[in-house]
Image (spheres, rainbow, N blue to C red):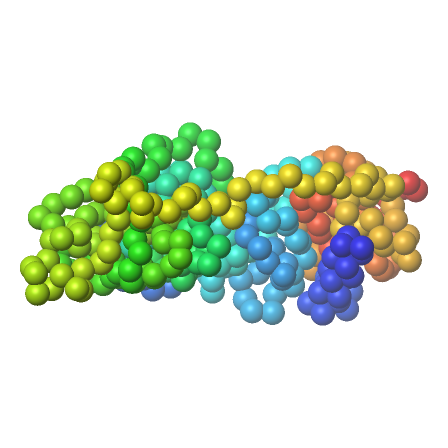
Length: 362
């Protein structure tokens, strides 16, 4: 049923968009302006990841209204190349179905391979965390991300936007740097401001929850605790240490409980279950068809086998090449050309024109 709904969506989206016959911490800084024509391209990493999108992943151009023709599964690697134009960048996808085109930068994700702060926000990322790109310029990417908490009532923070070096991002964590600094855990019961420095400005407010949020103390100085919250991405900042205020201010101090304090052991809460922990799931039933899921239920249209080496053309340009045997659902026919919705597996699907000689019965 899921495959049928997805195929129906793809066919509808194609019909709408295609023409009749084709389809350690960085300094605080403000977000960069959109690059002007002729400006050097960003220092893209070798690859990034495709994020969740309802719309196509690849388009024929950078202009609004350009034909979209390819859908790539979330999490698949994609190589951006060149300058950002109108929010899109040229990209190449390798694999059994090789693709090229323009992709929205805002539709990409980066897997963190080197730890650091997303300046100027309190968001801190370590290898394996994932952030969403907004744009890129020079050696920096503007990204969005949220801290995750192991708490059922407050699973994550609001999304924060800041900058991170492009060199800190990739499509996988292979070869990544060290993880976060270890520290001692504490529990924070009261609503507490998280500051950017001791006595500085509030950058977030730690909510009062039951059970309370856990924080990790990384540094202590002059009555202040440098803490990290979350399980990645994190929030980092400073809170006042318990008992550091004068007597008359004692009632305003945050109640910070240390699980290692023997005098307060009765207040320590049990560990909170991680809502993102892997769960055992039933094995999916084997499909009766050898078609990729996105094509599996297209029983009302002819389905062909596509020969390796077949080039897919959209608006006169080659946009994809089958490097392995694939499948194609026939959408239209014009002489010796056939318009197909084609795929080799469930990682990428393309809509375009191929020679009829490249198709054979399955």
